Amino acid sequence: MDQSKETTDGKTTAFRGRDDKGLLLGFDHPILEDGSVNWRACVKPEYIFPNKRLTTETDIAKLPDSQLVISLAGLRELAHLRGFENVEYRNLIASRDYAAVICSITWAPNFETFDSPVIFEALADAHEGNTEGFAGQFLASIASNRAFARCVRNFLRIHICSDEEMSNITPEAPPVTGGTDIKNALVILDKLMRQKGIDFGKVKEKLTKGGLSGAENFTTIEEIPAPNILELIEMLKKFQPAQPSEPKKRGRKKKTEDYTTSNPVESTPPMVETTST
Image (cartoon, rainbow, N blue to C red; front, side):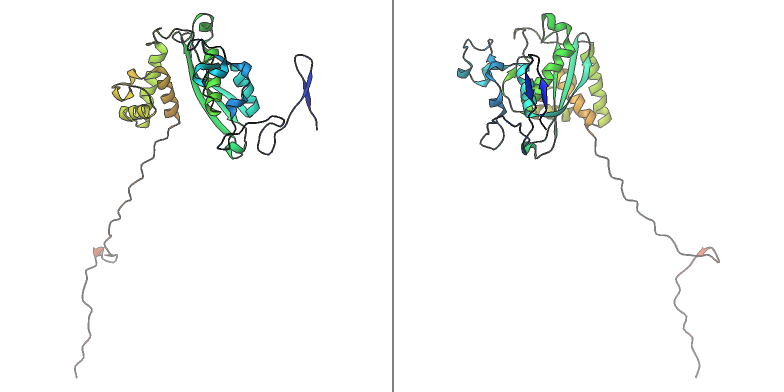
């Protein structure tokens, strides 16, 4: 059955279904050597532009992905092209000075996910150290957009930083060093570590293996950067420590009693009847 919808410009377009691979009909999906879809190549050029902080070149065709920027609108369109079932946002911290949000996207099944839905999450934050001007009044919204952009990029392997994730603050600007909300996050992290039986050594090992620069030299949780603190809190909330198995109880050897005398029965040799001849 042909379904249609009216767009804002008055034109009518038909809804397109998906094929047996879960891919949108009527779109030529470029395929990589490993057989997966090249989602990077699916982004329209009008959504990609040079990162002016890194280059003066204006031709995006001459620049590597590391010197490009992708717009939020481009990532939204790409998410619809890929197909998703649900988008959920969870506020870790939301205040006047700091916001941290997790975006969780349930991606629709396709051949890349073995025809099963997949949930993918990403964390992003916003504060006075990575926003400026008008954006500082909408920290939760900024953090939500950043988390969405990061979630789409990471899942679809788009190695271009989004415009939302970039700050207009110059690199020399000092980062956030404290604040009530960060202190509260440290308290939460410390409490979770004690509840889950996780010592600081394990936390430091996790951060080091995760590639956090200088993590091997940390001596206290206060040295952990704010975004990593929030990631650890989320991980520990989901972590379920293994329950120790109960040792087997050894049974005692019970004494055999003669309940007619209430005294233990002593072992006696068998009686042999003798007869005289």
